[in-house]
Length: 121
Image (cartoon, rainbow, N blue to C red; front, side, top):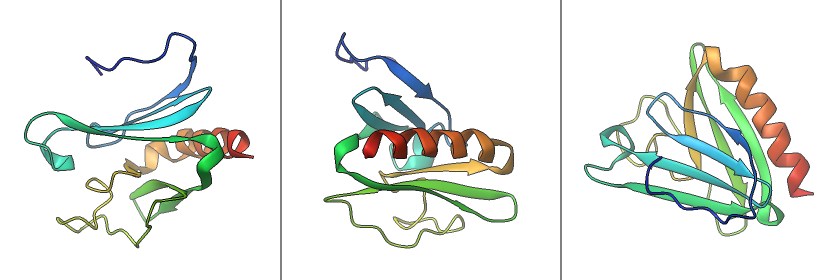
């Protein structure tokens, strides 16, 4: 993502793309979820959710027949059930701590969730 600056002492370990241009980026210190574009609720610009691993309590994948989402939980993050078919704030595309995905991405995100959880302990 252009314009994003990171600390020069942070190494990027995981960088993926969701189905609506969301991008989780895992460094050695934190996770960032970048959300640009109309489908994530932004006509211009983007939102950036970031959380240090020490504050993360869970990273789980919720799967359905062909779609799903990964959700990062932690202190200060209120989690509610998300619906892939919703067009409001309960859709994973619009929730800052979620990334929407398809069946083809499930295994990559499973590994990413494992990486996040290994850093959070």
